[in-house]
Length: 140
Image (tube, rainbow, N blue to C red):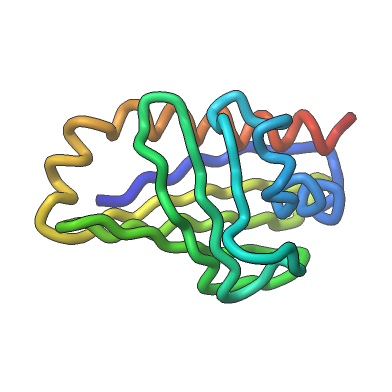
């Protein structure tokens, strides 16, 4: 199952990236995130860095960064018995000088269909809220 949400910001890609990539600050920026806890010592964000993320109505999950392209995108993955999740976070310049924010979620595994039925609407709402909040914070 795949979900994608987009938002447009008048901020530059660098301004949007600064907000989107500051994972430690997500609880301050995103109403959909209660807590982000980095696993291990504080280090620069990048491939192999792992985080525990707590969100309302969703179980605590460990997410590990699998791709980090500074200024452009990052991808992280999480898994549970019967389920693998991949979330993408991208920024791209628009012709008008602003930025398009693209958030994606892919679920796979035997429980992906069930998860989509149970949590699909909530995840879509969270992702739309997150894209919009990142855009707004970058514009401040």
